[in-house]
Length: 173
Image 1 (cartoon, rainbow, N blue to C red):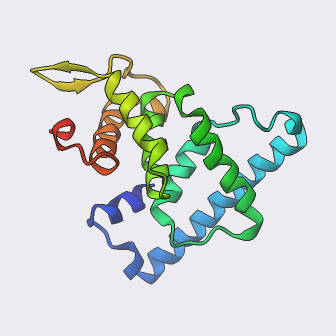
Image 2: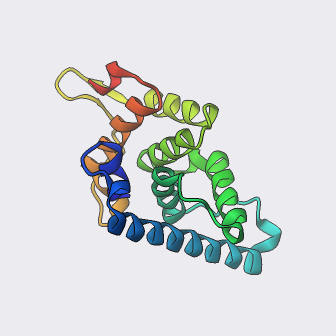
């Protein structure tokens, strides 16, 4: 995700450096393979409940990270897993934290979905609190021990989502 973000911001042009691009391409294919394994595990252990929520933090992070690298094709063997988790994200975004909702909105927006990300961002904005001193914030944005519980990173990603998905300059300021 980090390299994709740096590339997206214009800080590090990763596609122009063959060694870096090779490393990233291999890493993205590795992620595709791991999501395929997760998907196969669901098929094996819980096939009758495929329509239930199987979307975890790793799958959301995967979709978000993958959205920076749409120019790296998803191999045929991984297509079902990729589409399954995209469908899960569209269906179960509301069951996740604001941070994860922001990742889902950004990822789906980059994949060309205009409807779901707009709905997610509308919900995030409706649940925001406002202060003259600190601007827009979310009361459930608290610290924790896990990577997905970092308040500054969560807030930064939501600002990014308002900018990229909604082009909402007022929310970003």
